[in-house]
Length: 490
Image 1 (tube, rainbow, N blue to C red):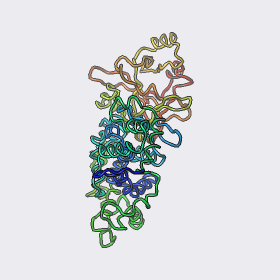
Image 2: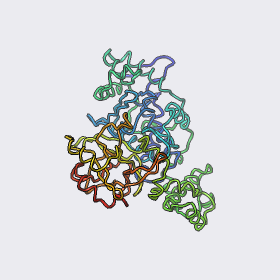
Image 3: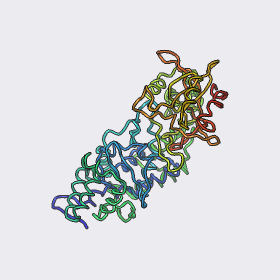
Image 4: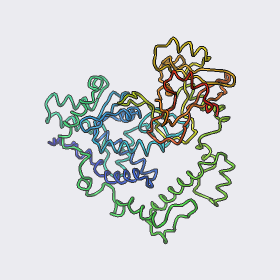
């Protein structure tokens, strides 16, 4: 049932953007899944669309979108054919269809990792800008997407008013209350109804308002796009795939001339081709560890333009040598603050309980975090172990030269970070499928040198992979195995 008020848009009109952009977004989604070339602009538009799904499709406040976190996404719940996500900071929850969930998951797996920056704190937020910082305004992002498709802008407040108007005449009091709670107009309201089942029921109720449905056929719902474009423009992605087949993107190749290629006058294929080549050249250069060597490689290839700066390549190179790690001021700062924004704690539904997942890719040898706790002697550690009734002792014994030492992570929270959960102690054990290993370093803090156990990638690690390391039969067995692990000092 659609309720119309003079001068006010309908829900369907408010959600026009979702329908008009969907075909393009499905194309980008497919290219992301198949690991085809996707430009930075397309990835940004895809992020905008994911935000629009939540604001226009689920009537969420911009604050809920901005406050959405990676742990919140990792700990989503599958219930009754829906995917339920909670935003604890804003005390909000919403229930996605499988298709909507697939869009957001593609953003998490393929778009977000390209935005993560080594020395920029993203605060664990799900939506971050290309510079690595949390998005400042979901409202502005929504407005930009409207402008891109030349559709009159619709704000979150506007669609919420339209939904309230429609609900006021179409629903009973209980249903109206459910809709108000789902939109979470205020923190007290949200606190009262922060329940996943409520979110699912309310989604079903809202669907009866004849609004947007993510499952409808995009071709039938959008015969004409909001922006002025030709049929060739609609099929840009397909055409560019054909273009690349004729003119393959290589490290040493030159983009074809317009006469040879016949690409559009607006340079879109030319720019896409160069962006793809830039990415290939960046990947090729990420292996060398010095500015001088990178510069020589660039000169050897004869590249005079459209290549990364040697300084930028060195900045992205991982891992550094151990001697560099021990004097790395940025690493010291992270250890002090226990800020590892590329990690997230996930609740597993099996016997593992909680674990830690990577929210970006790591190359073999890259520092992931430290095994944080109080540094004590091995003798003190054994006394703590003997007096402990905790089956998981959280004690890591190791050697440093002639000294036998122990990291005591048993006390939680630790004395130096009383309000934080440290990541190292939350990683699960795996003897045969480990992807993380400890590395002993003497970090040269300004106040003095300190024995530190870093957890580094034992192999290349993919986005969303659970991090595991071998701590023996159980943590208490560190007393036996940890002392003799030669690779601790590699």
